[in-house]
Length: 180
Image (cartoon, rainbow, N blue to C red):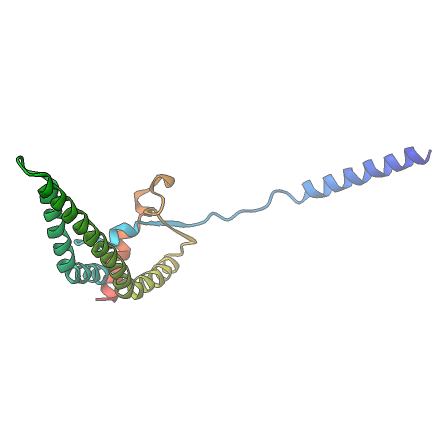
């Protein structure tokens, strides 16, 4: 008897719980308003964000001398690796040693340039990138957006159904007008 009563109580409890849950109905969802930007367009020399493009040009100009020097050294290394016919064994050994020394020098100069470039890139672009992020937030809020997706971060992950959702050009125009 006690067992039957316990089973009935459990079944009744489950039934009431199920009825109460379904009586509330499905949860209401609010559609999100989504915008798309492509931040890789910000660095385009034509139609990009002027301040960012100018910073990249400055960086390119500052490192031109190093880049040219490394290119020149690489050309010399290629010349040393192309062995003309009729060289003696001693000349080949000397040439090989020169090539190894030059390769080490090139590698060091490349690494030094890479570190200096990275440091300088951050100095020039970090403040600009922060202002871009702040402007993107304000831009999205002004248009009532809930989500702003940067398609350059995962281009195959976004299927753009409505081309008007791409706000890149409008944002760049807005940013450039407010940040000459």
